[in-house]
Image (cartoon, rainbow, N blue to C red):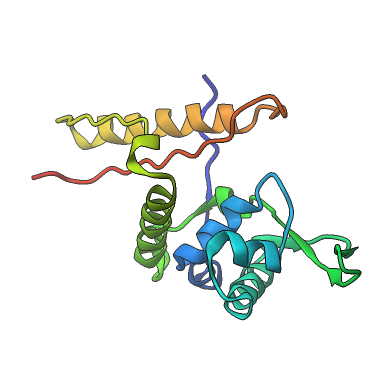
Amino acid sequence: MPAPRRRRPATEAEAAALASDIRMRIIRLTYRRPLTNKELALRLDKDPATTLYHVRRLLGAGFLEELTPRRGTRGAREKPYRATGTQLALDFRAAASGSAVNEAAFGAFLAEVAAFGVSALEQRRVVLQLPAEQRAELMDRIDAVLEDFRGRPSGSDGDRFAIYLASYDGN
């Protein structure tokens, strides 16, 4: 199993840009398929102006890229956006906005579960009692497995799914 890739510390600007559940959801939606602001607004059930604000924050932080404009069904010029994957190489723990990023990730998870329904979840819950160094080893190994699968080529025949993993002290 490959060692987990070490992430660089996120800047405060990067952490602030991800401190929004809507922006986290935009990144997920545009990860494999570019979407326009209008398409994002429809999928998020948000006003296009609100969505554009969030898209611009993500563009400014390097989490989205603007692709070549295209003509829409009515001939209007549309700008598709695609996630860059930059956030996957960042460690948000030391950033002042790091806890806000955690809250945003959890909010995005809850919003997506609300949209798809709890019955769509495949869940595991485990309670462990480990010394700090073993807990760190466990999280490193989980990161390595996730990184291994994330790095594999994705085919169009595969099902797209998301994993939300959280660890907390349960004392």
